[in-house]
Each structure stands twice: as C-alpha cells, then as structure tokens.
Length: 91
Image 1 (tube, rainbow, N blue to C red):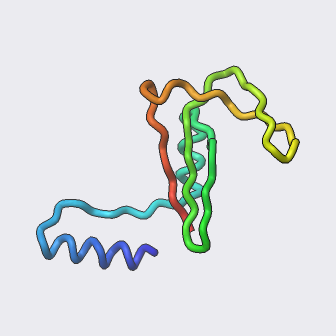
Image 2: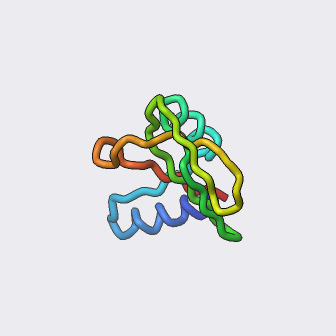
C-alpha cells in the first residue's frame, strides 16, 4: 500500500499537483481517535477495503436493539455540526 501511494505521489509531483497521499497505521489511528474521545460508530467492509466511522461521544450512553434482537450500547454522538466524523480506511 505504501509503495502504491508513493508512486501516486510521484505522479502528482511530476504534474505539479500539490496533493500528497499519506498512509497511517490503522491501529495507531484508532488509538489516537479513542484517546481524543472518539468512538467507532460504524464499520463497512468489502473484500479489499474497510471504512470506519468515528464520532465524539457524550458521557451518557443509550441502548440500541438491532433486528437480530441482540442488545448493545452505543455512545450517543454530539451533533455533527459540533464535531464532524472522522473516517479511517484500511486493509
């Protein structure tokens, strides 16, 4: 993955495009987000990619009951205008 991003960055540099892609460790990003009060709210996966949706959590929690009947708790996010979600892609 890092080699592919490096090649893309080289192509952008040749065409004087200032954008540069960066690859971070998914685990390091999870630790950083959790340290700053974010919780993973959703994960979407395909064969090749995974995308996680993070939101800042309030101290109160509420319960959700999915269609399968399992009960679990999910932190209640603050309004999106106050804190936009962070997305991590991995794989």
